[in-house]
Length: 219
Image (cartoon, rainbow, N blue to C red):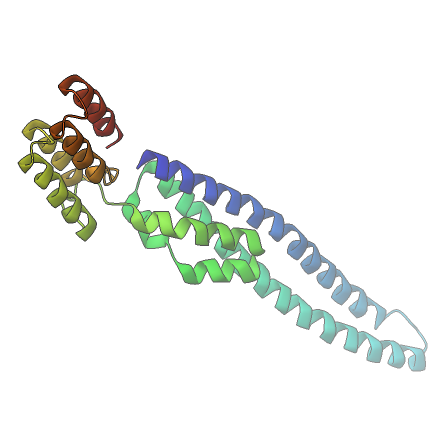
């Protein structure tokens, strides 16, 4: 699980950095539109000639409408970008503290799509990449077995019954699963094949034991 969390942290960090980079141009555009609206308003009152003032007012009015429209548009864009940024930050903080439940609650494909649209492509892609590993994380200490865990446990039990695993080794693997550890590597078939080679005389007892322990170390 630690390796998974580190990978998730990396994805979220990359997404957070690029979301900040995406926020910079939108903020500059918002400032530009605000200045445009201000300049247009000043221009409407700049001339003392009534006719020129009327023309200036007409152009200034159009400029203000244009500037306000884009001001609202980019302002809304920035708000959504900031919301995506804050969400990624909260997810990163949850991963740092090991709060799997919070991380799963914040995990959302919908927000990843929003991030792709409003925060640049990379933050959204990072959220989509992180979504899969986050879904596979299991809550530590809940004692609940997933369907995959139960299938793994059944395979391990069959290895005990076949004499491939010792009862103590089975008990250790079962404790890991019940304790919320990641599912062990799928080495059950290799262990069975190894036992078959020993039974056929292709491997000595010592050679079999060495190889068996190597496979068990990977679980």
